[in-house]
Length: 419
Image 1 (spheres, rainbow, N blue to C red):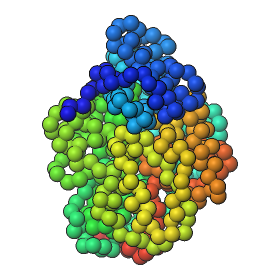
Image 2: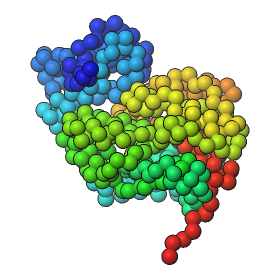
Image 3: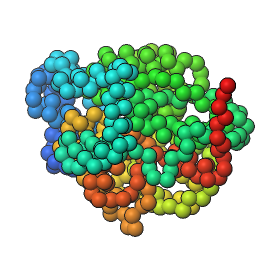
Image 4: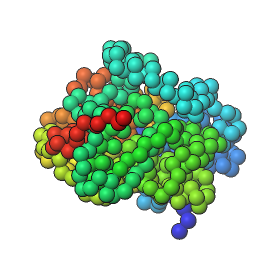
């Protein structure tokens, strides 16, 4: 059965309202226009010409949507809300252009030199400790909090010059291509290292090649032309038939959607190669590492849970860490308010959604030692929120915990310098 796209994906909506309690922005405002059902009414009016693309109220309510797609699994009718939102954001972007701040941000993401400079500056602020000292409430201080939130969790990072010392045959499972991206490449190189080591310890050889932005920020903003250009560049940079591994849920959802974005069989075949790192590890049945006695909570990234439909893979990965107790987290399926550029373009709503997330995490008693989530924006957002709330709970990517377990088990050795 062919998937409905564009506004046609909204046809199944019967306005039942089951989506309302699944929508973080509706829960924050109580405004029907900030719910999926209300936004679908606005999208339909835009499609029919009853509302013009320049209408300020239309743009305000559509821009306030996180795009988390949490409404989709709650919908009994199978409405493709995400597809409809993509079309509804593209129309005003074509008609009116994008706000200058958004255009500037998207321009940075398009060019390697620019995003390396921008994220490199954030990394310097983080590593100097200045970002943590300046973090707090408000748009500017929150930005410093995001930079501080990208730091490796204490006690988890392995030395970057270590490699797996064998495992079930060096590269016996074949080669994988690691998608390095942009934010992950600069601010989360420690997660790339953990990804490489844990995959090597489970029998894969890993090749990482500089690629750049996947195009997800551009799709979310309605700039589909730039997104398609970046998609083609990514596919050209990673040719062949090897699995493409990604450790950023937002990027993974975008990479898996290139078939839809480009509309070609070649793009669909390329997207079929994409795996989240937890998917690949869970499918193989990861090696058990050394015990780590810790209480851990898992907050599911929206674009892993709702967009990619990956549900149990993280539990399988955590089962390979003896002693790690996975504790239930209320609202783990709801968005944290990061959503790509959202926490920068919609700081007020982002803060309101984050406040609810922090309250859910703080309700766990006794508190977890570590909160795990598989997306860079989510890691930074939740870490910043917990820091502002005075919490000492560390935030990390799931493969970082597995990496620490493997390090303690002696699965790694120092890399020998090549001559």
